[in-house]
Length: 409
Ligand SMILES: Nc1ncnc2c1ncn2[C@@H]1O[C@H](COP(=O)(O)OP(=O)(O)O)[C@@H](O)[C@H]1O
Ligand SMILES: [Mg+2]
Image 1 (cartoon, protein in one colour):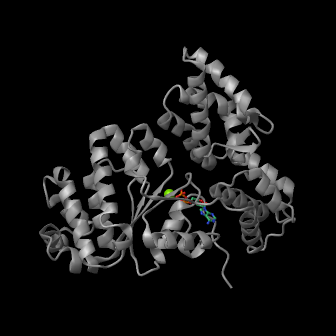
Image 2: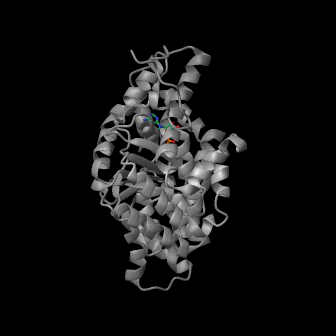
C-alpha cells in the first residue's frame, strides 16, 4: 500500500507524493507529442509539482531539462541557465553531442576540474566576454547541436512570463528580439518534426501581458493548457487520506466543510488547513468536527505563513495593473470582500463609473464600460473573482476573501 504523503506547505510536491494529476499528466504528454505547450495557473496551485513529475518520470523517450527563469533579465542568462541545467541532468549528452563541433562548450568542459563545484556555469559565463551581444548566435548553435543528436529533448521553462516582464522593464526591444527568436525556433522545424519540445510554465497571464505590449502574436503558437483545479472529490480524498492515514478520527462532515470554506481550491491552503487539523488532533487527541474547520480557517488568515503567501495577490495588482484599473480593482475587491455572497455585475459597473469620475476620467460611456469589462476579465483570468451565479461575482478563493476583508476592506 502507498504510504501517506507528507504535508507540503510551500515547496513543490515531491513527485513520489504527487496525486490527483494522473489524467492531466497524460493529456500533457499527449499534447507534447506534436506541440509546444504553455501551462498556466495561478501561483501555489501545483504547476511546478506537475513539471517536476514530468522531469522525474519522462515518457515518449524524452530527456528532460528543467529551469526556473523567474529572476533572469537577459537572454544570455537564459541560455547559460539552460545549458547548465542540461549539464547537471545529462552530462553525457553535453559531452557527446554538444561539445563535439562546438568549441565554446568543448573548452568549458576542459576547464571544469580546475574550477570545481558550480564550475560549468562559471566557465560558460567566462567562455565569451561578449555573451550578451552574442546570445542569439550561441542560442542557435545550442539548438542546432541538440537537434543534430536526434535525442528527444523536453525543455521545461518555469516562470517564463516573469522573465519576459523583467525584460520588458529593462529593454522592450530586446524582449521583442528574444520573443521573435524563440518563435522562429519553435516553428522551424515544425514541432512534430522537431526533436526539441518546449513546456513553458507561468503564474501570470502571459497573453494579457504581451497583448498590452502588442507582442501577443509572438507566443500564440503555444498550446495553452490550464492546470485544472482540484475537484471536490480530490479534496475529499486528500483530507480523508491525510487524516485517517495518520490515525486521526474525524467526522464525515469535515471534508465537505473544508471544501466549502476553501471556495475555488488553492491547493496550498488545502494543505495548510488540513495540516492544522492534524496538529489540533495532536494536541487535543479527540475527534475532529466541522466546527474545528471553521476555527482553523479563521486562524489561518492570521498566521504569518498564510499572510506572506496571500500578500502576493494584493501586491501583484500594483505590479501588473496599470491605472485606472489598479485603483478600481482594489476598490471593487474590497467591496466584494465584505459582501455576504458576491455582488452583481451592475453594482460593480456603477461603482466603476463612480470611481472613474472621481479619478477625473471624463471618457465617454462606452469607453468606461470597456475599461470595466476588461478589468472584470482580468480579475477573472487572474483568479481573483468568479461568476458564482448569473451576473454575480464573488472571490474565487474563500481564504483570500476572508483575508482581504480583514486587511484591506
Ligand atoms: N497535487 C497536489 N496535491 C496536494 N497539494 C498540492 C498539489 N499540487 C500542489 N499542491 C500544494 O500547492 C503548493 C504549491 O505547489 P507548486 O507546484 O509549487 O505550485 P505553483 O508552481 O503553481 O506555484 C504545494 O506546496 C502544495 O501545498
Ligand atoms: Mg511554481
